[in-house]
Amino acid sequence: MEPAGLERVLGDLLQPDTGLIQRATVQLREAFRHPGALALLCHVLRNSPSPQIRQFAAVLARRRLTRVWKKLPPPEQERLKTLVLEALEQETEHAVLVALAQLAALLLHRGGVAGWPQALSFIQQGALGPEPQRAEVSLLVLSSALEAAPEALAPHCLALLRLCHRVLAQPSSPGALHYCLRALAAMAPSLGSDHLNLTRSLIPKIISAVKQLIPVNEAQASEAMEVFDELMETEVAIIVPHLSEVVGFCLEVASDQALGDAVRVKALGTISFLIKLKGKALVRQRLVPVVLGALFPVLSAAPPPGRVDPEDEDEDAEDPDGGLGLQTPKHAAAQVIDMLALHLPPEKLFTHLMPLVQGALGSADPYQRKAALMCLAVLAEGCGDHIRSRHLQELLGVLCRALGDASPAVRGAALFALGQFSENLQPDIAAFAGDVLPLLQTHLGTVEPGRGPHLAKAYYALENFLESLGTGIEPFLPGLMEHVLGTLRGNAPPRTKELVISTLGAIASAAQGALLPYFPALLDQLRPLLLPARPDLRPIQVQAVGFRLLGVTPDLH
Image (cartoon, rainbow, N blue to C red; front, top):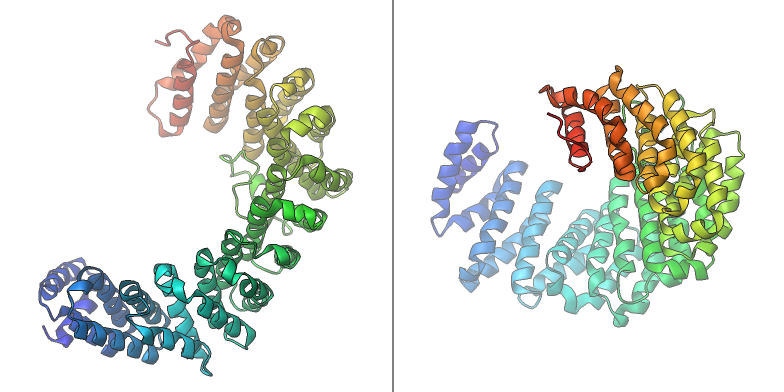
C-alpha cells in the first residue's frame, strides 16, 4: 500500500459511516501484515494535511511500537527517533503534539535516555529557548515521558529539577508552566534527600506559576495543583517549611468567589490532603485558626439570588447526606473540617472552631446558622469520643432547637447533623430519646410530601436514632407505628413510602417482639405493595421484602 492509500484508509476510519469503517478496518489489518506498515504510518504522521489523520497515525504508530519495537533493526529504530523529533519541531496542532509526545515517551521508555540522548537535548534546549511554542512542546514531551516512564528519567532527576527551576524562574507561557508543573508532579515519587534543598526552593515558584495559570485556564491550574499533593506524599519533608505559604495560597483561591467551582474545590482538596498527611505540622505552625477563619465564609456563603444550595433543592430526594458528596466549594469546605476532626486532637479543634460556631448560631443570616450546623455534623465522627464525654447534651440541644428554625435550609442541616450524631454517638445518644424522638415525629408531620430532601434527611435521622434503641423504643412505638401506618395508607408519593418502609426496618430491629401487635395492620399495607409490577413501586417492593427478611415478619402470602 502507498502512503496515499494508507492516508485514505485512516480518513475512512474517522468517518461516521459504519460500513466505511468496517471496510477500512479490514484494509488496515491487511496493511499491518506488511513489514513496511510502520514506515507508512510515519510518513503519514509527518506529511498528511489533515491534523486528525496525523494524530491518528501517531496513535497507531505508538500502539504498533508497543508490540514490534524489539523486532525493529537498530537503524530503523534510530530513523524513527529522528523522525519523531522532526515531527515535534514542525507540528503546530496541539492534539497532534500530544500524540507525538506520547510516542516519544514510549521510545524513551523502551530505550532510556542512554539510547536516545537527543531527546533529552531536545527537551533541555527547547524548554529554555526563546520560542514559547518550542518551550511548550519540549515540556509537553518531558511531562509525557515522566508520566509514562518515570524510571527511564530517574537517573536525570537532579538535572530535570534544575531545568524546571529555570523554567519557573523565567517568563514562560501558560502552556509551558502547565507542563512544567505536570512534570514536577510526575517526578515527585522519585525525589529523595539529595533533591531536598532544590525542591524546597521550588515551592514559591510553583505557587507563582499556578497563580499565573488561574486567570488564563482554570482547568489547567486545577490539574497543575496536583503537584502539591504529589510533593506532600514524598518521604522527605518538602512542603513543611513552606506550609504557611501553601495553605495561604489555597485558602486565597478557595475564598475567591469570582473563580469557578472546580479550581476552588481543588484548592480545598489540597488543604484536606495536607491535613491528612501533615496535621501535626499544621498545629505546630498555628495554622488551624487561619484555616478555620477562611473556611467559615466559604461554608456560610449564600447561594445566588433566587437559588438555593443543591442539597436543599426539592428534586434532590435521593441525597440525605447533607450534600457532602457534591463537589462545590461549600461542601469541600465541610470536608476540610471533617478532615480536621479526624486528624487533629479534638481539644485543639474545638478551641478554635466552637467560638465560630456559637457566633454563627446567633446570626440573623440563615446560611451562617446552617454553616454552624454543618460543622457540628462533620465533627460527629472524628470527635465522637470528645463530644460524648463533654458536649453531647449541649450540642443535642442546639440541634433540637434548630429543628424549629424558620429557615428550611437550617432545618435541613439540623436533620442531617442529627442523623450524623445518631449514627456516630451511639449508645450514649439513646439516653436522649425522650427529647429527640418527639421532635422528629412532629417534624415529619409538618414536612410536605414534595419536599424530598427534607423528608429524606428527617427519615435518615430517625432511622439512625432508632437502630440501637432496643427495648428503649417501646414507649415511642405507638406514635411511630401510627405515623408508619398512616403514611402507608395514604396517598404519599412512592419515594415517601420507600423511606417509611426503610425506617420500619429500623423499628423492627429495635422492637423485635414488641412489634407483633402491629403485624395484622402492617401486612394489610405491605401486601399490595408486593403485588403490582410497576417500575415506580419497585424500590418500595425491595424495601418491603427487606423488611420481611428481617426475620420478625410472618409469611405475607
